[in-house]
Image (cartoon, rainbow, N blue to C red; front, side, top):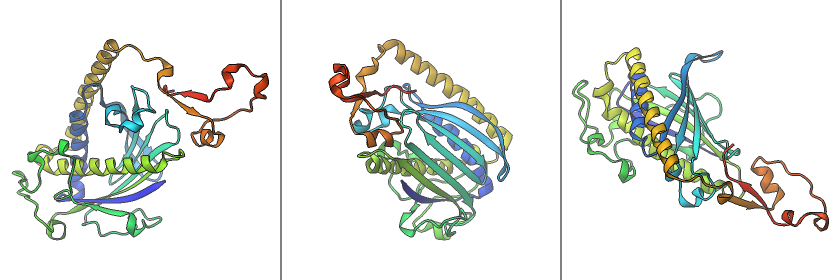
Length: 308
């Protein structure tokens, strides 16, 4: 298990970002969907929690096979997706990522938003994050993958016509007003022998990139969402979700019709160690002496990588 706390500041207020976050997530998801990959919204509805009060729950399927490294694609099916379940009790949110194909894989992200520059310790009120596990991300100067860079989202050139804010300059987190911080505690767990450390590090690298790009976009797009009401941004969210779902399903159907169905046995892994099977969440059974068993049971047990 690998836990890190990311702190990402923005030249916004917490009240403003309540709208900006919804707008950014919807537009970003739409931009990232296409070619049979992207984000499908399964449900988006109000919910209530006895501690947090009224909020919103969303469930999404994130199709991302081509974004996985080659060594990981060997173990997953072609139509691979991760399920995202998010509870939004703004200014506190919680998001979980799971995959039925990988029962030992889980990501949990707790977020709290505050009007400061990341100076609050133990913002979640339970166990303080160790200092060496706290990472400040700078939306101005920290590098992002070249494929995500857009000059219009470069905050060293950004100026908001509606608010008069920008551009950002070195040291802006200590001088800029307004300022807010997204505190995100990310827990990644993939308890499979031989793959755990490699996978958890890969996940955190990608989460870092997603957080940087998303928060940069929320600021760069401020003139598109600033002044919207909650009802207006929810309507915008619904329209984009319907559009994205339709595009994604159409792409998947086209891919399915063009590509022959892959036999179950073409993606498999060989496992002979009982402890490894148990770490993957699988039960084992005792097998009789090999001399009395059919020849088919003498070879290693093979587990098909078809999703449940």
